[in-house]
Length: 111
Image (tube, rainbow, N blue to C red; front, side):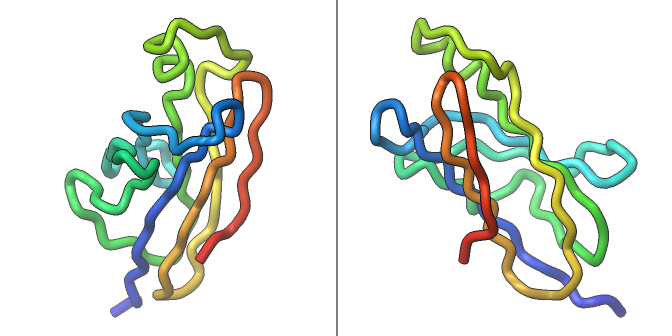
């Protein structure tokens, strides 16, 4: 049996210097099938996915609904969504942060 990994994410709004609370994040597998969804909490974190998923070795995508999030604040953005493709290759914890503003973003593997 393959080892399963865990996944979390954290979104920070660099334009405001605050967590991006209330941003919807969707998880997809390599074939594009939706696996789970989460919404960032008051600290900008997604730790609970609905439904809960067991991730095994493979390719995945997180899609951040940035356009909806900025629109809810009455702001424009260049990016209607941010998609981060990543690979799971062990049963470790994977943390995928997103540093965001209306006209740019950055990501890295967190801890």
